[in-house]
Length: 83
Image (cartoon, rainbow, N blue to C red; front, side, top):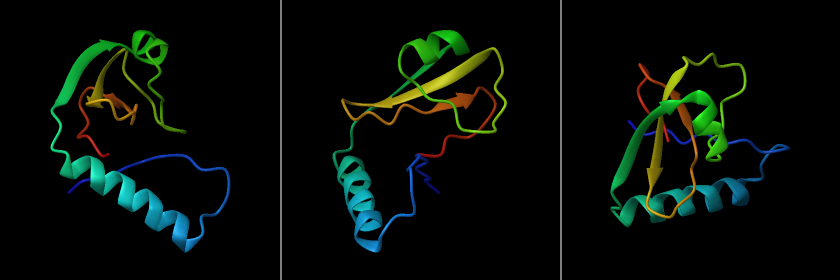
């Protein structure tokens, strides 16, 4: 299962949800390599990665990137990724 997390400042309209789904699916179809880096949480945040609200993170995190597409999630090292 694949999950894509992001923040939005208000409730999304159905057409906005569909636009996000289309964008994510287009990136998946590009079949880009996924780069995995283990780094200090501070270094991940400095690279532009974002932490999910309310989540607690270890000092070392796994940061995933997919080609030039900016998803920027920060994962606790032991967690499974969810895009």
